[in-house]
Amino acid sequence: MSGERRDIFKAFQSYIKNSKLIAQQTLARATRDYYDLMLVGVGCIILILLLLPQIQKVVLRLRKYTLLEWIGCSIIE
Image (cartoon, rainbow, N blue to C red; front, top):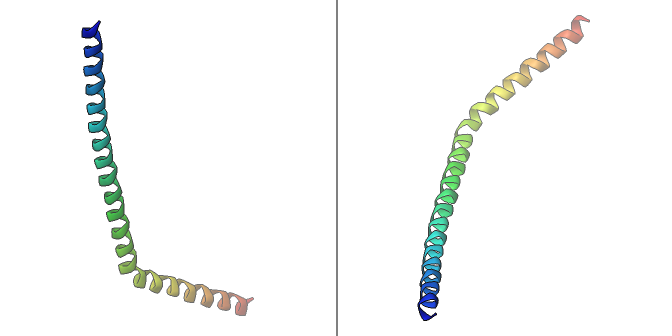
């Protein structure tokens, strides 16, 4: 009977050790995924800030042409 209990105890210790290892690996993976996501987010923000002046110029040109076309159409009609 004592041999069975010892085997059960060893199995339980092994289970606890493995679950701690799995928990550490899960935490490491989650941390890496979090920082990867933050890095991508920061990269996107930097890219948007770099392209924002060019985008604003295009939007202003489109608005200007749309306004001129609207005025031109209303004058013709």
